Amino acid sequence: MEISPIVALTAGGGFAAILMLSAAVIFYSERRARSARVSGAVGKRTNRNGPDARSGQNLAWRKGALSFMRSATNGLSLVKGRQAKEAKALLISAGYRSRDAIVVYTFFKLVTPLVFAAGAALYVYGLNPIGKGPMFDAAAVMAAGLLGSRLPEIILNRKKTARMEVIRKALPDSLDMLVICAEAGLASDSALKRVVAETSRNASVLSEELNLTALELSFLPERRQALDNFADRAPLPSVQAFVNTLTQAEKYGTPLAKAFKTLSQEQRSERMLRAEEKAGRLPATMTVPMMLFILPALFIVLIGPAALDILDNFIGMGS
Image (cartoon, rainbow, N blue to C red):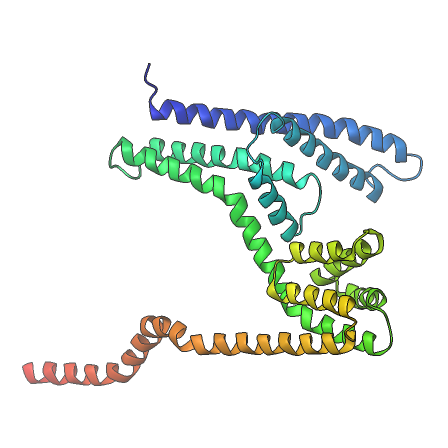
């Protein structure tokens, strides 16, 4: 029996709708139950609409949503093996270190293509905007589903890129503070904790990573492992150079102040080269906007009055 594309897509859209409806029902029921328990626990100390009740409701909401996502993806192996390792590394680099992050990622990898394909099917087969036959309609729906399957990775990659850019810009200043701490006679661990204490006031991304590295240095059996974890969480050449410098300084007894000062100078030189590179690309980048938006307006301002005078003269000669 041959199944038409519209039937298959409608079935997929129905399955996605059932998943979302089940998520809403389970979430609402678990939220009410957990909210009642939290309200009963804190009712003696605070009002139901107080901040404790609201925080308890938010926690119940998160737990209910996570339990549904875990139950929906429990029997599926959408992300496994090498893909699971790459997904975990991407999530960690994007700033999602929770053990439930992979569950949320897998759930959206499952639901997003179904929702996109169902929405595209309703739009394409309902309004028929393409009008070139069933093959093009099916290709459009498949393209929407493919875009939906890639959407979680695209969002994570953009989050990772923005986060790495913040770390790259903040690293030279942290290296300068490490130089000051090392010249003051502090050891590497003490200097790192001092830098974390100073940079945590701004709640920067680099401060969080350095804080986690300092904690791992204190309880991991091998210091090299803690530094490698930092390099894995922030896959940047500057971070890898910082890890290598710190490792070599501890291994060969190189003075930390001198090593950090050299590395800081290199990072600032690299930042200057990046700025010069952007400035060098600016003329080529501005060529197209100038041709499309600036030059036509300039021609109108310069040539417009002369063209109007010529038209007036021709009209006067004709009359």
